[in-house]
Image (cartoon, rainbow, N blue to C red):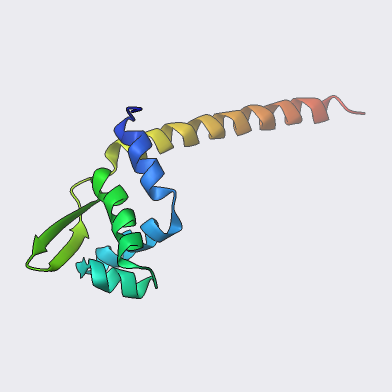
Length: 111
């Protein structure tokens, strides 16, 4: 099996709009698997798969009490992901700055 870094696992989990919506919902309050399935008009199996991906990324935790599995936001704070995004954004801004300087130089030489 391929080993992924935490960054890969998190971005893969966040790549799905349903999983992002689940995180937004859990940001307001904890919810059971059944509640989430109803909210997203999904089968229990379908929502369990989404929650499992989020749980593997550390973005959600679940706890089973009796027959009810409750989901809540997990411990991950996304610091590593924020750092990577910030570096990527800085690189893009530098490229745009270089392009702007090039265009300024080019237009100055035009008659």
